[in-house]
Length: 219
View 1 (cartoon, one colour):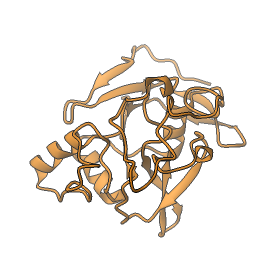
View 2 (cartoon, helix red, strand yellow):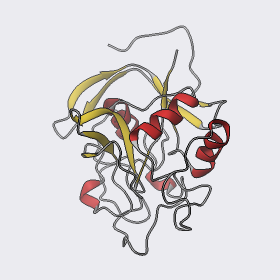
View 3 (cartoon, helix red, strand yellow):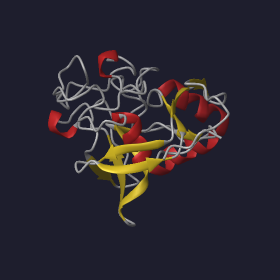
View 4 (cartoon, helix red, strand yellow):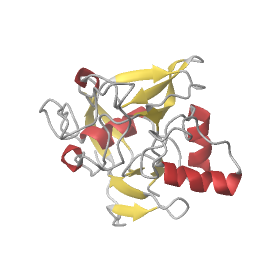
C-alpha cells in the first residue's frame, strides 16, 4: 500500500550542488523484471538526465579529482554529452560530492518503465533512432547530448534511460567481481534496450559507453 503524506512533493527539483534537474518518483509498487514481479519502492528523486561532462567538470574543479578517460577525444568531450570513462568508484565519489547516491536497481527500473510493466520507457514499440541512440558503429559513433530524444522519455520524465550510455547502479551483479549497469548504450543492439535488461561491468572499468545518473531520498 502506498504511504500517504501531508507534504506535497515537487515533481521536479534542482540539486543545488551540481545544478542537476531531478524528477520525483512516488512511493509504491511497480512491475519489475521480465517476470513483472510486484516490487515496492520508497519515494525518491532521480536525475532527469545522465550526468554530463559539464557537471563532472565542476566536480573536478572543486575536488581536484582525476579526469575521466576519453576527455581528450573530441567524440566524447562535448559539455552536454553524458560523462563516460568513469569507474563505479568515480561515480560514487561524484554522487557523494553532490549530496546524492547511485540508484538501486529497483529505483532505476521504476524510473525507467513506470508502474505498468512496459517494455521500454516510451511504451512497447520497438526502438528506432527517433526514440533512442543505439546500434552505432564503434569507430564512428558516440553518445549524443543528453535529452536529444524527447520521444523516448520515461513515464516519470527521465531521459536517455534506453540507449546512449549504460548507467552504474549500487548493487553487485556478481559479488566482488561485477557491478550492475542498466539501460544499454549507443553501441548495443535494440534487444538490449528493454527496461528489464540487466548487465554488468568490472567496477574499475573505464568504458566509452558507461556513465551514470544519481538519486536522492525524498525526505
